[in-house]
Image 1 (cartoon, rainbow, N blue to C red):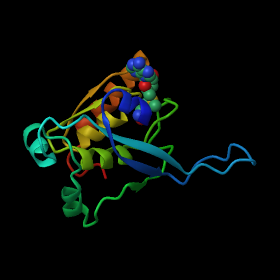
Image 2 (tube, rainbow, N blue to C red):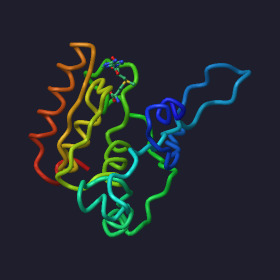
Image 3 (cartoon, protein in one colour):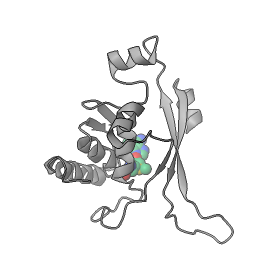
Length: 167
Ligand SMILES: C[S@@+](CC[C@H](N)C(=O)[O-])C[C@H]1O[C@@H](n2cnc3c(N)ncnc32)[C@H](O)[C@@H]1O
């Protein structure tokens, strides 16, 4: 993944560990998986500084301080979030659903309120749900029509929540 990102002309800026703890044992001869890697890439800055890029385009850096003000903790590049519970996955038959909480954290540290998140592999729409809940817009691309339908349903449901309904 990182090689493909660099080949496309982007820069690798960081790596994030998604620590989910609850992995299944696939084999007694392998260690039980407990994390997944998230590659953080960035298009080369259009402006000469990160601050200038954020001012003009709203992207280019992490919004660590905003997250610190919100939760009183500096965000780390290890994110501990359990895999989606059966309740969170109810009615969702996508095989690789991500937790909404993980996507909310990633969106908060990498975008500002009012920004637009692009997910070119939308699946059941978890990124779009997280974007709605964090006050961002989302553009999603998904090849399989039944997942597009599911994503639309989940987004409409998220849009119907009042602020504070969803933890
Ligand atoms: C890992 S899943 C995303 C899961 C999603 N994060 C969720 O929580 O539901 C990747 C999705 O990308 C879609 N996909 C794969 N290649 C694609 C392509 N070339 N164009 C559009 N969608 C594609 C697959 O159908 C699959 O649903």
